[in-house]
Length: 344
Image: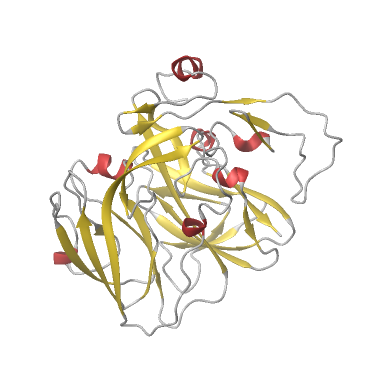
């Protein structure tokens, strides 16, 4: 648990398996290991022993590696498909004008089992929709602020300084940003209104994937954006999630084709932590820092990412099975950021 708040104290506040809504933040439910069940032994289709399981609230999850936070009860296995699988390249020539509508809205989201979060969102989701373009395209963002606070939209990457998006847009205001997409790679975008840490930690972030002219080699593509949720009771980043829902990829592994190239766009938007990381079990992967370059910079099984940093990784999972991924800061994995690739 976070500094100054023990798990015992937390459970006293919320009750076993419970959660509270607290002033724009979240309090996640508790998890306790179940006693070993007699299931007859054996392993599932991904090589996991089904007798290794956890109790999350009243739900049983099939591996002790789920750690501390599970997803909302009854969530649909396809609920994060829009975040997990980026838009496909459309093959349009470089220089295409791409109009994108983005509105800031306040939403009450369930970011873990029973954990409610009063989010500031781009287009109603955390993270925001993934934008995809080709290097040299003009991305024209029509921005509306539908909240009672000032907000804006700042892109990483290269663009004209007058389009940098740091000026606050007042409540009810609007703006148009014209960004020439580039360089080819993966670049976060986020609110840049003071206080910046609050605006980012409340949910105002997303990613833009920029393809090189002519595209990339074929691959099965996945997007993974790491972020956290906080409140006074559990402290900063008491819940940590890939793509906005804690524990989702533990309960619903990302199915990928065994023996084929997989490309993952990994972005760290975890506020209040100086470093995060991405670690893959049982394989090493090629790393393109910020998704840039025509060839990988190095090969690893763990990459370290500062705030706002990102990478494109490519890997082939050779055999059918489950391949775990998580931040190698284990307290982050324990708070909901552990998942699986299920090679099928």
